Amino acid sequence: MEKRELIYEGKAKKVYATDQPGQVIHEFKDEATAFDGKKRGIIAGKGKVNAMMSDIIFRYLEKHGIKTHHLKLLSENEILTWWLEMIPVEIIVRNYAAGSLAKRLGYPERTEMKAPIVEYYYKNDELGDPMLAREHIRELGLASDEQLDEMTSIALRVNEILRPYFEARGLILADFKLEFGLREGRLLLGDEFSPDVCRLWDAETGEIMDKDRFRRDLGKVEETYAEVLRRVSEEKAGVAVAVYVSPKKGILDPAGQATLGALQSLGYDEVREVRIGKYITLRLEGVEADKAEERVREMCERLLANPIIEDYRVEME
Ligand SMILES: Nc1ncnc2c1ncn2[C@@H]1O[C@H](COP(=O)(O)OP(=O)(O)O)[C@@H](O)[C@H]1O
Ligand SMILES: [Mg+2]
Image (tube, rainbow, N blue to C red; front, side):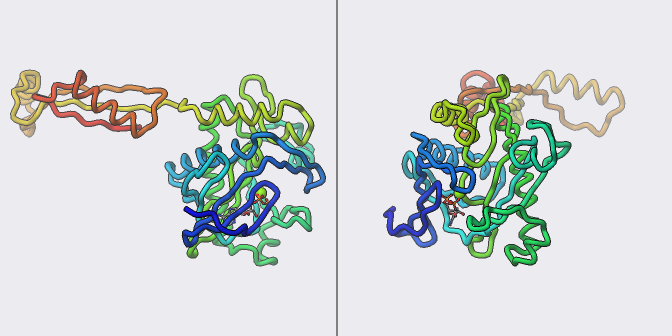
């Protein structure tokens, strides 16, 4: 993979061409801006946190059926993705009132929404990223109705996937912003997922764990970004596994035989075969799903089943 010319430099990332057709490198910067670029600063280590977190979140979303631009993490602060023709509409999903929504509706900060709210903003620095209604998007020709519907439903699905994900890591996902683009006519989730583009609150202390620390000069900005990365890096959620063990066909199964006889004597003549096995459930923590399955198979071979006389089947959650 060769890094070639700079295609675009934004406020948070530099996008480079590569020697692979259709693939680009996003280099995440430590520079931070807020309030339409009026506030500027450096958050040491932010580039690393945002690239690594985007890698983790995009892979998690892909695993849950969301199509994204993500290919892989290349270095601490670089990710490789498909190049997208970006749709200049930012999709915001809000679970709690904060920032501009709290102001606009006159809600106290942190009021929980009755249902997640989706908003659209024009990605246009000169205009200051104004909020858009569906009709504005149609008027400006920024996206088709079908694309907007698809972006909206993907955004809500992302919310359903990520809310419990962050909750398991002691974080409340208050709101977040997504950007989409097209590759060969197909809509893919693009850009990044990081504390720069979402609001996260510590579930226990309520502490602000995102870019608002920078916007509002709350201090401990670097430490907070690092802590968020630490929490998402940890394999925390655990994996539920079910194991079904049953006697192999043709192996004498006295319990099955006895039950077959009993069923038939009760008049259930249609029963021709009964095999009685075991159903075992396990919950594993601190391992990734692929590895977990391998480990459980090993447990079956060594202890949970008798491979000479029993079959087993492993089902991951
Ligand atoms: N897969 C992609 N292909 C092409 N452009 C992308 C892709 N993902 C994100 N972008 C765009 O690249 C730029 C990323 O840089 P960033 O610093 O976030 O810019 P901005 O200051 O415009 O938000 C954004 O304009 C974003 O829309
Ligand atoms: Mg950006």
